[in-house]
Every structure is written in structure tokens, then in C-alpha cells.
Length: 175
Image 1 (cartoon, one colour):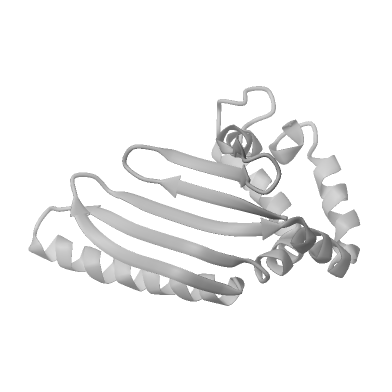
Image 2 (tube, helix red, strand yellow):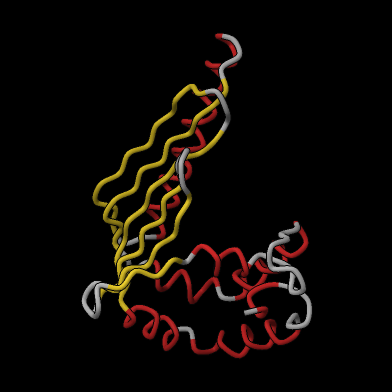
């Protein structure tokens, strides 16, 4: 049973949607959950650097499980556009150079950590403000996560222990 995940960030909106297409044609908006994962426990609207780093440490503990699951996922569509502010010709030139260097590193990282990427587009545009626009579509199966958990079963107690240790302060445990 595939679950389609669509992550979009552009000038108008920023969404992470989960579509359960085979079951009920149900759409689940994932934005608030992601926001709560990086927020402080007492105030879910307040995201600080300290709470984000604490949440990222939880993901770092589970990196083997996540890496095993992502190596089975095939990305259907990936669009990434870097927009930089135009100042002068020199600024634009260096913006193009550094953005394409960064995009090439990101492209190599994505191709290294996912099974395949079918439709990809990377680009750079000059705009009024600096921002990054992206769109990513991929399908996930629950079997991928079960296989990743079974394959990395030795990491599960470590992940649970680290989440219990930080339960009263930050991160994914505040849901």
C-alpha cells in the first residue's frame, strides 16, 4: 500500500501533505506535526535554535533506520530552485556559482541516499528576495519502515532511551 508524500515550498505556500490514496483517498496535512517536532514543549508555536538542535539530535540517533528506509524510496519528482537577491553583476555571478556548487552537492547527496530520482530539476533565479523553492513527490510503503526497523533492531533501544531522556524539555516527545 503506497503512501504518497508531497512536500512543497514556494512563494505562496509551504506544505507537507500525506495522501493515503489506496485506502480512502485521504489527505493528511503534516505541517503542524513538523512544526511541533521542532518547537519547545511548553509553547508549540515557539521554535528556538536549542529546541531544533535537540530534535535534530533525536533524528541523528535514528539515522541508520532513516537511511535504510530512504534507500528503498524512489523520488517521483524533485524540483529545487534557489532564488537570490540581485545587487550587481558581480553579486549575481557569485550567487550563480555558489548556488550551483551547493545544488550539485545536494544532488549528489540525494542520489546517494535514495534508490532513484525520476524527474529532477535544479535551477537558479534572480529574485527580489533570497529564498529556496522546492517540490518533492515520493511514495512510501509501510513495509519499508518495518524492514528498516528489523534491519536496525539494535538501534531501537538507543533511540527510545534518548527520547525518554529529553522527554520533559524538547522535541518529538511533545506530541
